Amino acid sequence: MPNCKYRGRKEACQATRVISTTWKCELIVKVFFFFLRGKAPKELHVILTETLGEQAPSYYTVKNWVVQFKRGDFFTCDAPRPGRPKTMSTQEIIDQIHEIILEDRRISAKSIAEQLGISREGVGSIIHEDLDMLKFSAKWVPKCLNVDQKRQWCQSSKQISCRGW
Image (cartoon, rainbow, N blue to C red; front, side):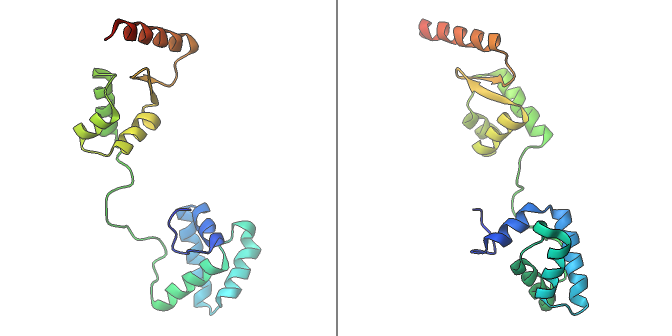
């Protein structure tokens, strides 16, 4: 299970992961409204469970939000966090990686990562997800090869390996 500030409260973690960020913000605003009306966390949870059913956050999540409101933390959405961005896949980097691969299809993801100064995992993610390519017979090829094209790649790679290149 990924890091979760609720540690040990599986239901709360799942509830906060399942709902989208926008929906979560709207939900916290509604909880805040009822908090201002003097509702206790248990009452809030009952209201949310009646209206949302299985998608309602757990009692511990609602209680945590109420505790934050009592401390004076009235921010309804997550604040931006410092640090590097989650992904490096800008269109510019995707294009650079694609050009590097087209120049040399035998290049490794590690070499590309060193050239561009990004992580090897980031390069692998861009190659596999954004460019939709995979490594086949030591070459990067599109995933959408048909059976004949795959067979041709395999035969040509066997011929090259038999020559001792």
